[in-house]
Image 1: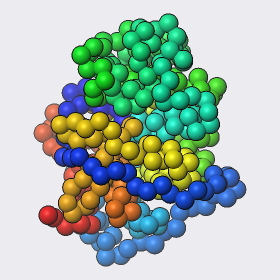
Image 2 (image 1 turned 60 degrees about the vertical axis):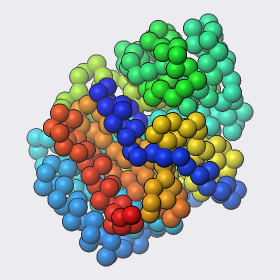
Image 3 (image 1 turned 90 degrees about the horizontal axis):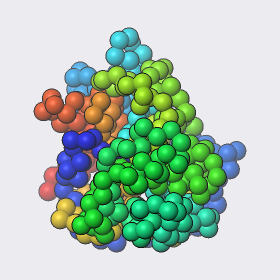
Length: 376
């Protein structure tokens, strides 16, 4: 998930607390073939739907354009879209409309790195020098694992947004500011995940987008999910449009919108992916546990690769991935591990950070959580 330049601290302020170990390993499963894929089972819960509809309807009256989906025990129990994908004309958001989920991309990039490790193409303990020899990062002994854990010392300079090939991206990130005192400590880093996106390409020998499709989307049976470099992000028939139009330079494929930020997906397919991942359909069980394992404890709690793990009553353990862009796109994915409930909210309409209003992702997901679990 790509955190906005002015809201990195806010993105972490999710009440993260020290967590218990991750869930037990799911049973071994075979990766499904494309022919084996089927739409997830839907069994809408009418009573729950009536309560959540009130929340979505209220948000829609205030400009919400997006989707909300819930899955319980592998079954979709709520799926709703609302609003227009266009700012100028009425183009209803549908189940096929894609949303830019920003820094939730990091969670998918972490999955791709672990898939490469599962296939023996790299090890998370490898030095950056294995895939980026001759760099200053390699000379400092930075490892792939440190990039995954936001412990490389890199920050979020977005230097790779001006890079359109891999070598330029590596050079841009290698030249980005580094806090040497924070090497080995948590420092949220989009630059680090942009570099991991380059490593995905080097490991698999294909573009990031192709690896995403073949290694994650296909085994999770996702039909519509895409990426920044594949579709026209300015077309409201495909992608819901944000509050502020994007500059032409950033709309084209670039390495600042690859490994850290470029995922395009619906709420329903977010919960579908998370369920497939947790059930071992995407990664082998040992690598699922590696992905979900809580890492170095911080003042605000613990991180996992590409996301966060929190614990709060009465919801229990919550795996949380989130993203927010300056131009309005924001999204959240919550997996309530102790209840096997997955919630996703996606929207392109902020509200803008300077409005002083809560982001729709927070407002809706918090209200849904209160419906599901009540208060302490």
